[in-house]
Amino acid sequence: MRFGYSPGWGGMPPGAQYLSQTGQMPQFTSWMQQRAQQAPMGAPAGMTKEQEIQMLEAQLDQIKRRLEELKR
Image (cartoon, rainbow, N blue to C red):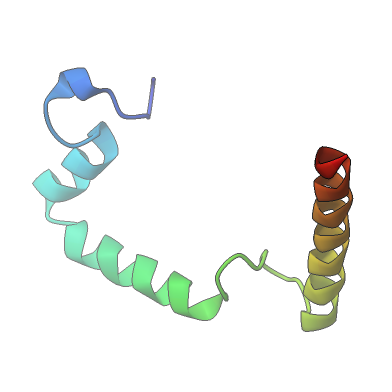
């Protein structure tokens, strides 16, 4: 629980509390928004479109196999 969230704190987790108290929250929020716009949702950084397609197709094949196993 070193950097995580514990309901016992009664508020924000320590990292968010620090950003809020030091006035860095607006910069952090802006940085997070920029990062979200740069990479498509779920695409690992540095992965080409073709590599992502291959990865997703492999995952889809695994899902289909598992569904067939469960249906038996």
